[in-house]
Length: 109
Image 1: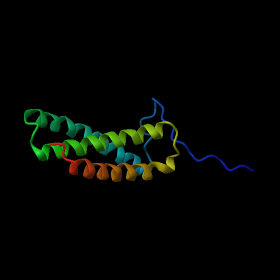
Image 2: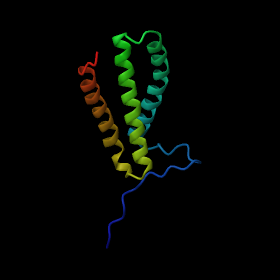
Image 3: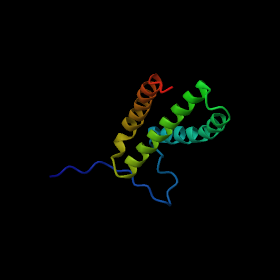
C-alpha cells in the first residue's frame, strides 16, 4: 500500500485564513509585511542622503529579508509541503544574515 502524499498548502482567493495553525507561516507573513512598510521609510531616508552608512545597512537588511521571505512564499505557492514552513522561514533568516555579512564586508567604495 502506498503512503499518502504529504499535505500541501493550497491557497485560494476565497480563503483569508490559510495561515491558521501554522505559526511559522504567520510570523513569516508578518515579518515580510513589516519589512515592506519599513522599506518605504528607509528608502525615503536613503533618497535624502544616500551616503549614510546606517541607513544603507538597514536598507540592505530589509531588502534581503523581504526578498528572501517572498521567495519562500513563492516556493510554498508552487506546492512545497506544509511541513517545510519552519525550515524555509529559518533558512530565509539565516541566508539573509549570511548574505548581509558578505555584502557588507565587501565594500565597493
